[in-house]
Image 1 (cartoon, rainbow over the protein chains, first blue to last red):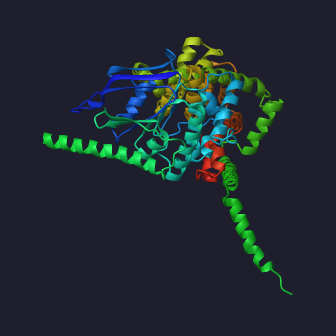
Image 2: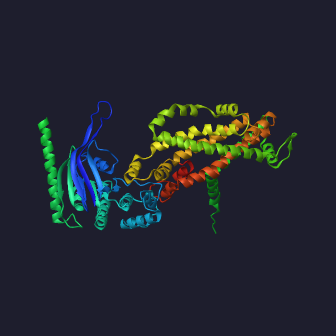
Amino acid sequence: MATLKVDNLTKTFPAHGKGGLPVRAIQGITFEMSGQVFVSLVGPSGCGKSTLLNIVSGVDTPSTGTVAVTQDGKKARLGYVFQDPRLLPWRTVMQNMLYVSDLPEEEARANAMRYLEMVGLEDAGEMFPGQLSGGMQQRVGIARAFSVSPDLLLMDEPFSHLDAITARSLREQLQAIWNETKKTVLFVTHDVMEAVQLSNRIITLAHGGTVFDDTSVDLPFPRKASDPEFATHQAKILGRFETMEAERAAASGQRT
Amino acid sequence: MTTTTANTPGWTRTKAWQAITSDWGARITFYISVVLGWQLLAWRVDRVPEPWETLDFLGRELTGDSHGGRITGEFWEHFLATVQRFGIGLVVGFVIGVAVGIAIGSSPFVRTLLHDVMLVFLALPAVIWAFLTVMWFGLGWEAPVYTVVLSAVPFVAVNVAQGVRAVSPELHRMSDAFGVPRMRRLRSLLLPAITGYLFTGLRFAVIIGWNAVLLAEWFGSSNGVGWRSRFWYDAARYRGFVGWVIIFITFIFLLDGFVMRPLQRRAFRWRAKRAEEGEIGVSAAEIEELTMTGV
């Protein structure tokens, strides 16, 4: 069972250029998640969501605090879906899938095909990314991340660059794949509706990189935005956002 | 009864004009102009051989005959000796250039370390290397080969270094996040990403290396294209000298048309294929440009 433990994590970026000030992106974040959960990190732009994901993936290092990703006590295998697809343009879709695989070739091909089928791209294996639409490329990105059998899957606003209709269709596909695979997922988004549709649990980050709210979403899948209960959950989270903004405005009023 | 023949002359004129102004038309017009200009120059200047005389000489040099008491028919011996030296020098220079370029592009330390050295190497003309290598190695195969290597390395290295620095950091971060092994990353990410720069470097290396091998042979060899050109030059047989100039220009043209361009087309088929699909709005002219320059 995959477990992610984030303990009192802080990240400060050094001052940039002459007269610049250090930027504190994350300030003392602590949370834990494990098992078959889909956790969303929501928050306004610049609250440190992507920085947190980079630290969890090992691409960036924390200033203080610790992050531990384990699978039954051992180091866990990670998968990553980025905001943009990040495919090698000079390799075919299948070659892109094989690029990240550590299985023997035959097995890797069969495995890749299984996940391409899940995202409806079983016929696109020999195509180059440039021949696919943005939505199809992102589906390859999702298939690639699932294909490495990650213990923990990190997703960084994967639908934010897509049009609303494509994003909706991909959310439904992601929900179906997750229901089938039940991977441990940490999903970053600034879209509350998206978080409510996909997650079991939503962690809200505030400006300045602190945890403001941590709430579970106990609604059955598949979820539809038109359901009254869905709307209630969404309204509850948005209400918390309004409280957060009001507190921030009050704090900044006190300072001035 | 009416006919439509009245329209024919206009239609023919348009077709003929289109043929003349096409790419092939432009090329053929250029070559005809060169031969005509050459012939005119030969009529006016004694020391310029006529085109047909030069062609006649080339025929003798290929098949074997005598020319003004001097032996001809040694084309293949000299040509193959030069191609061999050029080939070895180019391969060695390219491999060293790629390795140095990757090191410069990947490491700020190596970049600073070799910055001034690369500048000196880029600034030195091939003729200096030709003189130096002849001084160091004497007459023989070494001087031309080392001249090609020394002339080619900086151009390949600088281009490759530029390519390495231009590789998308997002793709590197993606590879980091998935823990892609180093060798696979080199083969599937770095080398394809710098292919355009590799071809630019290779093209420079071919042109500069070919010049270099001829210069080195001119000054310090006892056979080869450079030596043979000098032989006819010293004998004041200008048709021989011009004949060999035509041979080394033709070689570069053939190398470019039959080796470099097909290689580039193959390396960039992923871009051309994407463009052919018409999905990214690239015109046929741009595909041609892409496959020709590799940029």
